[in-house]
Every structure is written in structure tokens, then in C-alpha cells.
Image (cartoon, rainbow, N blue to C red; front, side, top):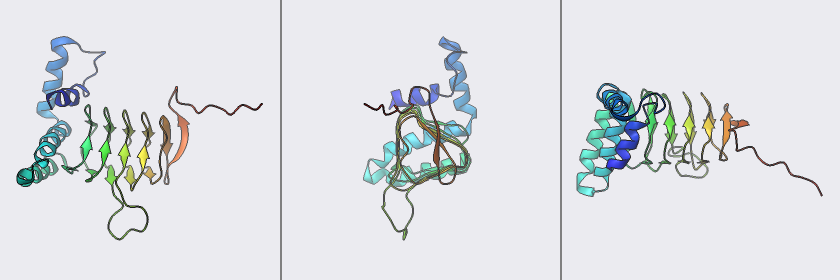
Length: 190
């Protein structure tokens, strides 16, 4: 857990601008004053507590505290890898069953979760790969996979799988380009 917390703290500081002790002074300083980092730290603790049935009440108490501090609701049952960065926490919702890989960056006013009760179609929560970036005002819902290094543009609605390295935008989200190095190979004829 300490390694995960270290990754969460360090993802908020540009390592190319700061190094050594200065890097950690900046990271800890941000952790003290920025509510989006408080939300991530509270999520980590609530997720750890959620594993123990008798301690789940405390996990939900911490989730409620995160809502009051940073206006973000991250369910303790969500699984989020190390290096998790909330760009801003306001209006962020991550539901139970959501799986997010390492080094994810999520902006504010983002909802990630199941489609909801009574919705027709496949049930299930989204799974986001490693190094995924999610823009402001995005909704990702249902049983979808977002591939590694994908970028979801602002105000997008994602209800279908997104391949690795794709940049998607719109409602519904469509591929608008590819992250460098992820362009699909052209089919070559005989």
C-alpha cells in the first residue's frame, strides 16, 4: 500500500522540473493542501478497509468524508491502480466494480460506472487500462473496456470498447485519431 500511495503522490509533481528532496517537498505540500489528493488518499484507505466485512462501515464513512472534502464519490469496491491522479475532484463519480489500471488521469465532472438498474442490455462496470486519460465531463458506462494509453476527450459518452492508444471524443464517442505509436497497421494487399 505504501508503494501505491507513493505513486499517487508523485504523479502530481512534474519530475522533469523537480528532483530529489525538492520533488518530495512539493509532493507532500500538494498532498496537504489539495482536495483532489485528499480524495485519492481517502479512497485508498476506504478500499483497504472495504476488504474486511466488519470494517466496511468505516470504509463508507471515509467515502462520505471524501464527498464533503472534494465533491468526489469513489466507491470503496472500485479497483484503481497506483499513480491515480484526479486533475480536479469536483463532480467525479466512480462506481463499484469499476477497474482502473495504473497511472490514470481523470478530470472533473466524470462519471464511470454501471448503466443503472432497469437499463436493458449487458450489465457490468467499465474497465480502464493503464495510462488512460479521461477528459472533463465524460460519462463512461456499462460493460466497456478502455485500452491502455487511450484518451477520452472532454464531454464524451463512452458506451462501446475503446482500443489501446485511441483518442475518442463525442457523444457517442468515436475514434478521432491515435496516440503516437498506436496507429493501426494498414492492410497490405498481395
